[in-house]
Image (cartoon, rainbow, N blue to C red; front, side, top):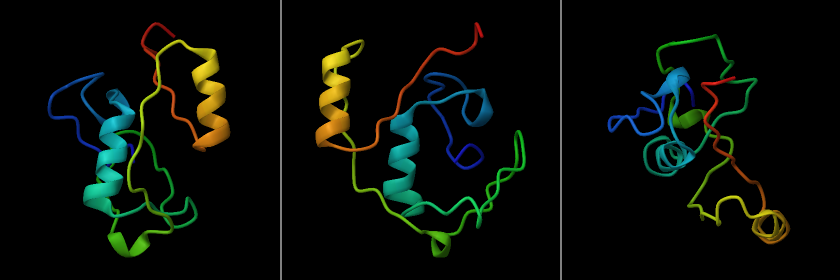
Length: 95
């Protein structure tokens, strides 16, 4: 997704390796890509590559997502238990 998800509003970065948000990635997967590929079918090649994804590569789909309360360990535990995978956004620039 790093080379395919665009960030036109520059929220959380400028897109790709320069940062974005999980909402942009999930919206792209659900509405444009119609799924995502296995790593074996779409290998990461490094920074700033051209998007090579085609919907025929889709191995899994996403239909939506929910946001949970920020900085709430109980909400994280409940979401992992009842909803499934969890995405976390951090401001990594200082790292």
